[in-house]
Length: 89
Image (cartoon, rainbow, N blue to C red; front, top):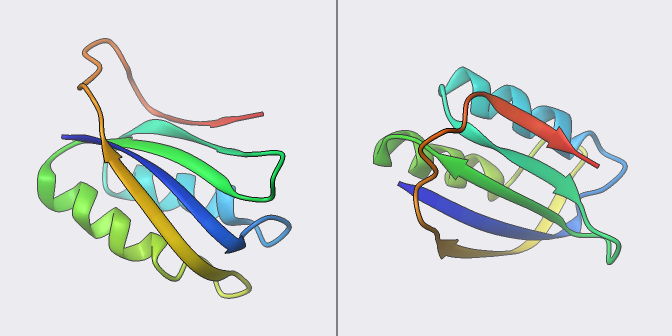
């Protein structure tokens, strides 16, 4: 399963990307996360359904200093050659 997520609210300047990477790695997910110019955070998570759903649940709140106001999700095609979870800039 692979999903693209757009997270809005106070999600930049609070370590959201770094915490997202750590959470994704702990769940053995592949994908990436990045900040967008409009102040939101975009990510793609790929892995077993239960691990991806757990990751989406974590994104609802994010790290302690974050204030998530909305999450949009979109199912994507699985990427076969990807390994690891990265920060994009």
